Amino acid sequence: MIEMQDVYKTYPNGVVALNGVNVRIKQGEFVYVVGPSGAGKSTLVKMIYREEKPTSGTIMINGVNLAKLRDSKVPLLRRHIGVVFQDFKLLPKLTVYENVAFALEVIEESPKVIRNKVMEVLELVGLKHKVRSYPDELSGGEQQRVSIARSIVNSPKIVIADEPTGNLDPETSWGIMELFEKINNRGTTIVMATHNREIVNTIRRRVIAMENGKIVRDEAKGEYGYEA
Amino acid sequence: MRLNTLKRHMRESVKSLGRNGWMTFASISAVTVTLLLVGVFLVVMFNMNHFAKKIENDVEIRVHIDVTANEQDKQALRAQIEAIPEVKEIRYSSKEQELKNLIKSFGEEGSSFRLFEQDNPLSDVYVVKTEKPTDTIKVAKQIEKFQFVHKVNYGQGQVEKLFSTLKVARNIGIVLIIGLLFTAMFLISNTIKITIFARRREIEIMRLVGATNGFIRWPFFLEGLWLGVIGAIFPIVSILVVYYNIYKFLEPKITVPFIELLPFNPFMWQISLILLLFGACIGVWGSMMSVRRFLKV
Ligand SMILES: Nc1ncnc2c1ncn2[C@@H]1O[C@H](COP(=O)(O)OP(=O)(O)OP(=O)(O)O)[C@@H](O)[C@H]1O
Ligand SMILES: [Mg+2]
Image (cartoon, rainbow over all chains, first blue to last red; front, side, top):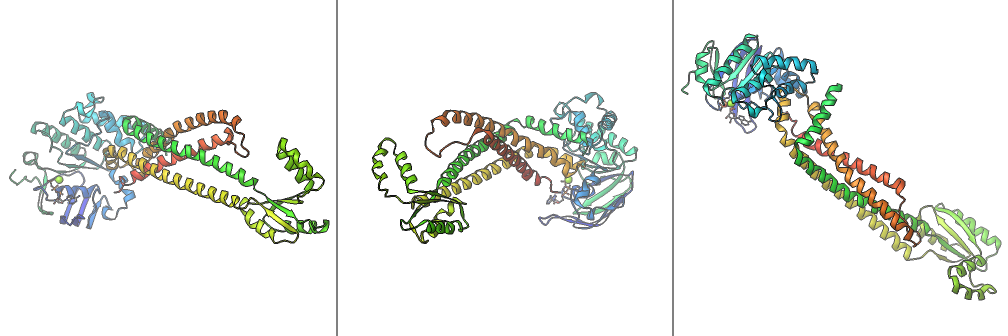
């Protein structure tokens, strides 16, 4: 469960990115965050994995207030949240397998567990046959699958995706969306900031629309609602 | 920390040396050049210090006893000198002894002084050494005032000059070494900063998936350590070899009194250890300085 109450965020340069946000997302929901550029979508999702701290307000994740979470506890929070970006953020000198295993190695998981979990998620994203490839030997869609595999390899309760299809062509995007649906069907909460009108209007889920740092619309099975 | 984690940090730090080949080379070169300079400097400094000590220790006060003094007066004077806290030892040398020394020091020509054996113009002498050589002048001035002291001799003027020259040389050396070390640290921290900058994506991902700051820091700590230690190898080996040869070549040829080189053993092992420690500290310090700003949440 994610619950935000009266969340304000002013960046050090004076930009007000969030201007009183109230939202509640239940475990297992699939939520799109839409809105024009600069509306505060990225800022909103960054609050969830504590990349940014709110200037005021409370953000409760499974009973923990992130506004008061000490810096030293942030790594533990991040182990329960997967994050996917537009630019994949893969390490170019590591293979597909190593990129995914990386997420477990750096939290000191045992080698046996790592092997099992990595092979399991690579199978889920359909890249079991490419474990030895390097990122630059993969298509954009395949790279994004690797990054998704990495985000879920530690079985997080929540996956945050900031424009995961932003760099992909429409065809490939549908495949990636199917993957997110599959992950959501296993009970994982998905919060996805996106500009992809077609996807939002086709795969109907809850839509939170933002403008100028405020939530202006919040509908179950909503529409994109802006001109592309 | 798990054994596996430690192994991973070791492996990662070594791998990163290879991955960042040119930066690694640059860092190691920086350490090498610095330690070579520091090493040569230390060797020269230690040896200079050694000469200085030798010369200083050779400084003595010669107290010429007045001819009018009888046995009792001499004993009283000795007691007075011994009562000065800075005095380490006092040795009596009769005028006959003094003459013999004089004749001996002139070798062949010395025989002409034999004429004086009948009517010795020299005086009996107390040879006084102080606890610290630098106290010589102070003690000499004090003894000068005692009764039955005819004259006090300690190489007036020359000793003062020697001491002040040594002091200046030593201070210049220390300032230079400190300056050199700081330059090296600055150079290395910058080099490692670039290494880390090249790996900022790796750090970003580590933080994203929940690695602790301690975990993130470890490989960089080790990498810095390796850079420092590897960088110390060439300076240590070359200084060992060069010093060994200089020592072998020069030692038999030096005939000037008090001037001698520090023997290879244990001096060279001390220098090696110092350079190794300097290298390790510089490397670790440099990498820790650089990693800090990447770990701010
Ligand atoms: N680190 C930052 N420092 C200062 N201002 C920022 C920072 N990040 C974002 N902003 C500003 O905050 C506002 C909201 O930015 P945000 O990235 O949340 O928008 P967005 O809805 O994700 O936009 P887009 O659709 O273009 O990705 C913008 O005006 C942006 O310039
Ligand atoms: Mg954004």
